[in-house]
Length: 416
Ligand code: AMP
Figure 1 (spheres, rainbow, N blue to C red):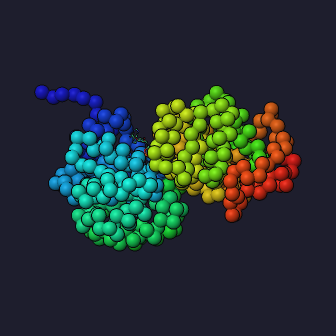
Figure 2: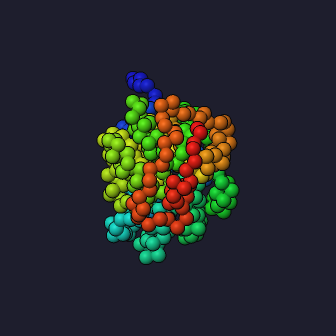
Figure 3: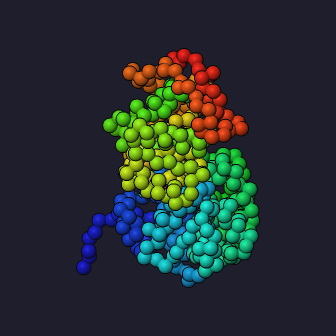
């Protein structure tokens, strides 16, 4: 007798029923474009270069075929390594792995700095199946001979463009040099810089190239807006915007850790629920902040680029660039945090007259100008408040854009 059941589009990718059950369990109804293309290619054993952004579903695109390969073998050796630029991303990949590996005996462990070495050492010495690691901490473990990669079969470089931006490529090369040559290598990057092309040529074999969105372009469902504003009124403008009803879940990017602290304090004083993450905060502080933002307890999360790398929060309604990112790829990464999985979102960028050059670079990368918005009832000519000396601790050695210097001296009437 024949039973009829509706096929899920995931059924056609060649995945094991155990993995399909995990995928359905997570509520995925259909593979994303990168999953549709990358999963069969990776299952066939080919090296793959995937040009895909965070939010595209790339993590499952590489984890599912890796799991399929490993689940057929006996456990007890480290057989896959995923390199990630940040600890947040590494932790997220570990969580995704746990979800997708449900029903298999495959285990993964994330290895990153800022937390104790010994639980990581224990997992590595036990030969955990999949190691997810940031380069620096992994090199520490490698120099202590805590990890044995002789049985390694698959290497993934995730967010390779970010590795480049953060100066990790030499570390990545040192790690790759210590791995078996006979392996499958997968590389994912939002954009393909020449340095990454060069790296891929030296560490990959005849890779299949998969690109799911044009490089340098964020999802088309995002609305972009530029708000011209003098430096000293950025926080007032932010507070004004946060009062809008549609500002449900707002991720604010600032350039420096100090500024993240200051803006968070001021936004909190204005009565908003706000959390902050940056490189000087401990892992547990970052996790608490992120959990509070994810649950909706905090309406606003203030972050620096590096700390926000890999943040995966559904339902971010707005990304605010309190400071204009100096490189267009950062803009793409930042605004990609909203409008995830084809939802709509809004990207707001504060621009001072000094930022116009950087903004033009971003507009070129987007392929279109971004509309300028001014609020009719906002006082753009309000003078800067008198600066209280020493209020924010020592000044930075190289001040940027107004801060750290006297805003008062630099003040000139502003015309949006
Ligand atoms: P990533 O781009 O890998 O960071 O994934 C972004 C988000 O999409 C994560 O929260 C995943 O759990 C989710 N996701 C991945 N694949 C799918 C899918 N096929 N359907 C729905 N959500 C997905």
